[in-house]
Length: 155
Image 1 (cartoon, rainbow, N blue to C red):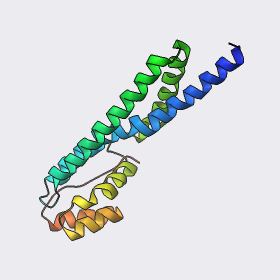
Image 2: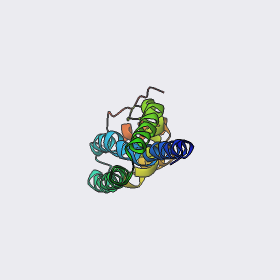
Image 3: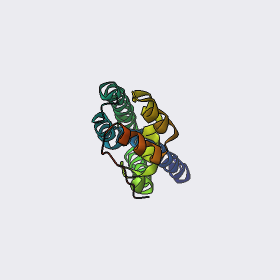
């Protein structure tokens, strides 16, 4: 095979590795590092259906774990070693690019959680505040429920 074609395949699979991280691994990490801790935090308020939210998050984590393992298995099984290295390099590039945005301490992840999981809030004020992702309204709704829960972010 021509070297130019090998380089092209390497670059394409590296882009695929980046996409793998961006679409799959990032969602898996979100479910594990943002979803579960925030469900536990909101579950203590008494106005949040933590059990149902945990079920949804567990289904999401299992789904993305199967997708991630499936794609990784396909690459490892059928790709040449230099293409596996390209895939890993692309995934590593994605990790480096998004490392600061992973975890629950970023407002973007908190906003994604609130907009996705607002349906599990039993209190109308809390549900509306989470749907709008208005931090002041969320704190006010939590205070009205008697919860000392506060959120601060690194952004």
